[in-house]
Amino acid sequence: MANFWSSMFGWSSGKTDKFMEYLNKQRSEIWGNKEPQWIDTNKPYDLYLEIPELRAVINRRATMMSSGVPKLVDNEGNEVENHWMLDLIKKPNATQSWGDVIYSLSVNDGLFNNSFAYCPERSFGVRNIIVPLPTNKIKVKGTGKLLKQMDMAGLIESFEFWYNNDQKEDIELKDMIYLNTPDGVNLINTANRIDTLKYPLSNIKASYKKRNVLLENLSALGILSAGKSDMGGALPMTPGEKEEIQRDWAKRSKDKIVLTEAEVKWTPMSYPTKDLLLFEELTESKLAIIEAYELNPNIFVQSSKYENVKQGLKMTYQDTIIPETKEMYDTISHQIGLDADGLKLVPDFSHLPVLQDDENKKADALNKKADAINKILASGVELSDEEKRILLGI
Image (cartoon, rainbow, N blue to C red):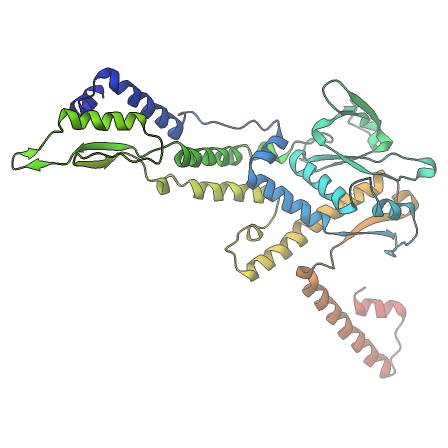
């Protein structure tokens, strides 16, 4: 290779070393190692901060879950208007609203499949504060007994909240809300989704790295050769022309072009960036993240038609967000003892515009059924209350 550059430009081995070092460095940075490079999934929060696609999906899910309006109802579905839980909803802690609390719990669940909230029990079972805690600072102290346990106390002894590596605080089981998304194997400390996204997340980071190298560090790769010719063929550069180009190349930085009075031609040696399929890989990897959280791709694609986005939102709420939020509320209700009083928290999403069409259709259908019952009654037929409920579908 050195002989080639020497014969082409007249560079000596010493003068060529600097350029060859540069060329090899660029080639290594662009094409990387031949072995695949996988990210470390043991620190999901770091990945959340570093990879915008992951953060966008987790934040969107959290925003949708926190959009539900909390309501306290009894076992008959009647809304309760006077209870300490309603005071807790109005002011969960010093800095957050109830929506912020659900948002934080959802983010932690998205990153770790486990989420925690400090909610100490006061006198008479009242709780007046709920503070979401970072999952990566919580250690679950299990009892070591998994079989034949009928309640959480049989599985978990207590929790440790680590402020830093040296300072921790022990939290009793009754004072902690512990939520987890089942992985099908573990009862506590369930495995997180981030582990299953190791490969697409690695490809996203690699894609950004390669794009950054192309934008910041890579000048054009190719050959400058003599462009003059006569009847006998190509004319070589003069020693002065070669020396001038060599000096210019050695001192120039990116985005600077070679200036020379010599007539030269350029033969590219680079690989077309469009053929690297960096953006296509980014799209496919983000789709894998979206599917892992069971969301609809249409709500993330800006080019999607309005109707596709609308239907995607409806499907996401109906198939994922509403069921998962209800499950979260059920667990909170049980762990703070609301079910013992015949009460439970439920999230209400009926106020959302994207779900209004379905609510209107339900109302229209109910009105039609009510009109039909009135006509039956007007004809002289008597109906019991049970028969009326059956006809109304309630």
